[in-house]
Length: 543
Image (cartoon, rainbow, N blue to C red; front, side, top):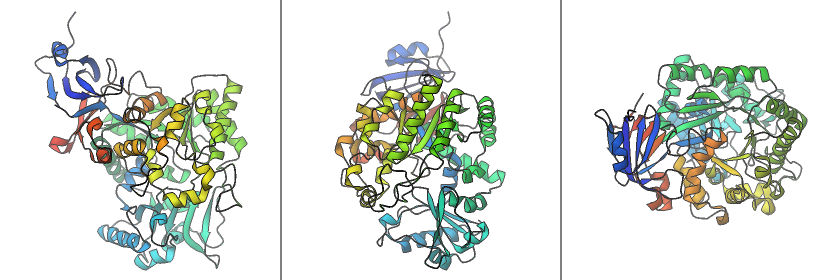
């Protein structure tokens, strides 16, 4: 029998296979997109042939490719080309950034921005349309809040969207009004839709350019697989699975994309999509929906009223009985389901829906998931393990909200169970990490840093140090955890023989880097399907 010859052999003194908790010296042989050997350099030499490319990375860090379990591809691609406002510490600073950005893009019909958060501003006061009108009287402007669940727009945007004092609120959402009953320029939840539908109507070629930029950015950060989750009905204008398929057919899809269209009762459409997209690189993995919104806007659904607004618990996006019926029906058809659930009321409803599906349809390996898990009632923590539900979390999210504002909303008692990553892990929950890009930046190492340090938005204080997890566990949640959550643990998530060769090389050994320097560590090489798709030494993304 002829011995298989490797296309590539990579080696390092620090290889984190994901099968143990420490890196160790190893060489990895790759052929035809798969790992065919892992061992010492001497052991791997039997796979060497005349055409084998051998790369030695000395003390640099080799690990499985990052697998982002929760993001929004095209929405993120748009944001990469928008005004980034997270650094603003006052409304004036935000307006300066917007003005400068608008001047740099004179031909773009809309001025789009993201990630403002008045919780960090000197006044902590919400902005209104009038300040945007002063700098942009004639061009429509759409600025998404950092959490993506409300937006700040100008008068021109309201005019184009047909929003005026008599416009009714949508079922889940509201149009902010001033004391005279006029729209104030703040749109919450589904009220953003009328504006987004106009702002995000891009020509096909522009979409191709945006998507190519996203792929290049992901490769440069060591991301080899992502999960593209349904965002909102209004963002559906950006959804273009056919575009992804074109890139795949052209050999330009440099990250695996798992698609999660809407859980909305239309199972025939869901089944058609699942049948159509089912390749190694591009597949429908299940269905996703929102149960609630976010804490800062008081649209997250809580079991008890908000501490600073005792007249509201928030609300659910759809009636609970509708949500449960959708889950039971989709589960019966073999779909995996994921729910955005931030408040303890939303998390409990998600569990109740999954439990009902199990009761009516029988137990199966469904791997349903709950996204974000920000504020959970302690009684629900064991249910992750009991029901086999994945905890899909983005550790940097707790540092994206100003901690004082967040705590004011929920009060001291509920604050004890905020982003309880270690508590969930101890209770047997399977963790899978991601970014929620563009709500957060795409860099996986920022999420790893927060998971292991729990340093909050001040950059100094630790928010619940007992919720820290180890570096090894954080890396596994971003690799093997995501692979398991998508039924791909036999193909992805660890470096072992027979698995797909999705690998990243970092410039430094993460186990020897001071924690505060983790987010700054750069990617050297990204490999997908055994092919180099990013090489820092050439400063090129391979397209």
